[in-house]
Amino acid sequence: MKITNILTPLLLICFITTVSFAKPKPKVLIFCKTAGFHHESIAVGIPAIIKLGNENNFDVDTTTNSVKFTTANLKQYAAVIFLSTTGDVLNNEQQTAFEQYIKSGKGFVGIHAATDTEYDWPWYGNLVGAYFKSHPAKQQEANLNVIDRGFPATNHLPATWRRLDEWYNYKWIAPDLQVLIKIDEKSYQGGENGDNHPMSWYHSYEGGRSFYTALGHTDASYADPLYLKHILGGIKYAIGKK
Image (cartoon, rainbow, N blue to C red; front, side):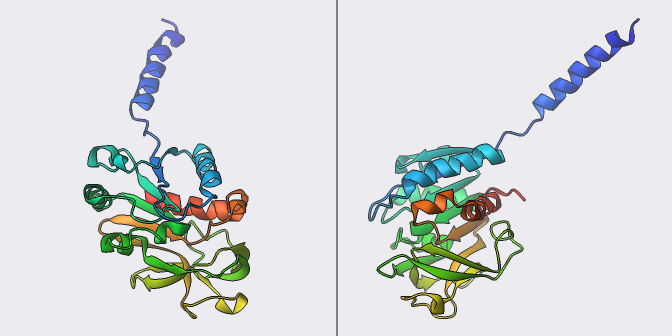
């Protein structure tokens, strides 16, 4: 018998085994419903995140429809991204489904106005980590101090990152956050949180993983390689990828 006749079925078995046990790509859901101010940057943020998914082996769905927040539908996603959501975007049943989703060990990413969302739902406030209060009248350049460069969202950033954006002040900040970036209020006008003014953080919450960045108001953010790697690192953390 020829050696090739013996190898062919063995190679076929190996191929079938590899296909059978291949892990499906993780999938994330971008949720961008707005019940208050609508950020124009959502329109460029969505394709930018889809491109990150294509380049980094995760799939991306997107919706503004809160009826997608059911236990059965959310089950397919490794993380949900609130991209500049505003106001009251989920009803009581949808809130319960999302709470169960996070408690099952899944992930959350909040971008920019995600802290300007669901003020009457304390569970969400603790998940995202803060509630928006105000911002200066105009966008300004400011110095961001990267205080934790050992995290996927910040390990590529300089110790001081100077950039133009809309800088949020907070009326409430959760006490258990692992802060990644603080803003230097002496480097711009209109800061109201003093020396402890976080701009990005992560934490474990009720069995799930949460990452937030206040950055991302401007359209230009979603063409900035440093910013894109910043949110990519947050997404990887949220979906459980190292």
